[in-house]
Length: 249
Ligand code: BEZ
Image (cartoon, rainbow, N blue to C red; front, side):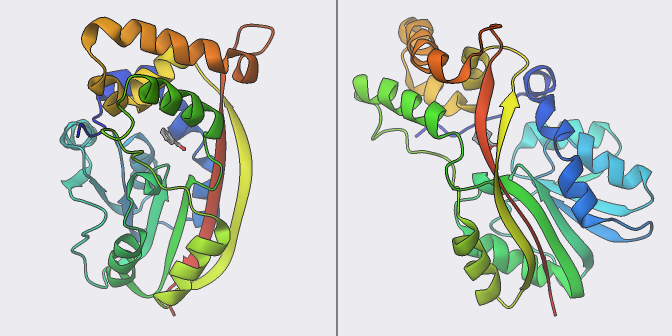
């Protein structure tokens, strides 16, 4: 089963909006100079670096070797680690995550590792895809896979919990949920839907025989066009965000 892989150059050109839209959750974190922060799913480190520039002591972790190379290239302390198997012990004032937790399907394992990583009184502040995220895009891509007999071979790589579901998991592990909300965030894309699929559904594309890939992309794009392409020809993605702030008593 092919897994999603990342190309930092491609990400920089076609997905920089992910980092740019992280400002709201950074504000919710309210980092203080000198704090030790874990950036869980730090990607290429562009947002992580902002915490360092602000005077925080930051460790970034990501499961993508390509992203870790890119983040280290920015001078960051970036470590290759599965967010579902964190190895830290009561050492962070805060764990932060932007647009990464929906790639970690074992949500309880993530929360367990975050709990262990936090000092007493530490914060867990994050934003991720939430219930209903990219429903229109996913419907069209799954249909195109099904048509080719590939849908069973390529499982959906993400989880999009509701506030009730994620809040209950946080509380079950003993974290106090200070705030949790779900909100739609239709997000303008820098290019078209084919580019989005190539960037974020690389694992789907890899399952499609090379000679059929362009037709696969074209089919998805034309199905979604009436729903997510404006009269000006600009595309957007039907993102829904789950944002929360929790703390360890
Ligand atoms: C998201 O940020 O919600 C997302 C991005 C790519 C694929 C799936 C979800």
